[in-house]
Image (cartoon, rainbow, N blue to C red; front, side, top):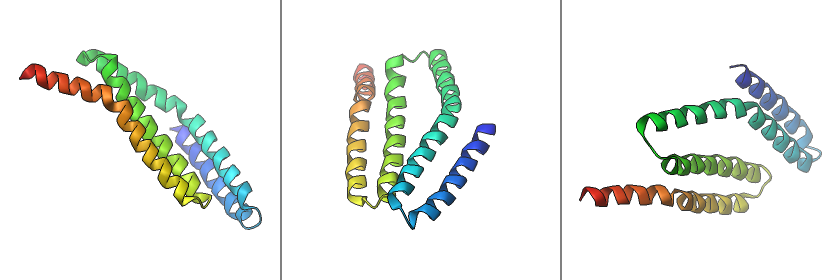
Amino acid sequence: MDEIGRAAAVAVAAAICAVVVKKSAGEVAVVLSLAAGAAILILTLGAVEGVRTLMDDLADAAGLAPAVLAPLIKTVGIAILTRVCAQVCRDAGEGGIAAFLETAGAAMALFVALPLLRAVLDTVIALL
């Protein structure tokens, strides 16, 4: 719970600084936003590791193979990374790059999820 407080404090402080700096040096504001984002992500790594451990435990209890769970985790990671990076591009005034990045993220998420889709298809075929 302390991590979210720290992350929120970093976010608010960086946002205020970015607003002040953006008027005179917009490119510095983008770098400040990236640094704040990196700091926030570092603060949340402990929580993400806890979620990963819980998901692994639940998968073991349910008898799911790691090959089923891994694509799900990778797809979520791709979605989060794509969203954050696209928003940074938009903040930098590059909406076109953000749109291309979102398209690439969707394609990569589908690619990473193919083994999971294959496993579901194999299961359905086996049931028929």
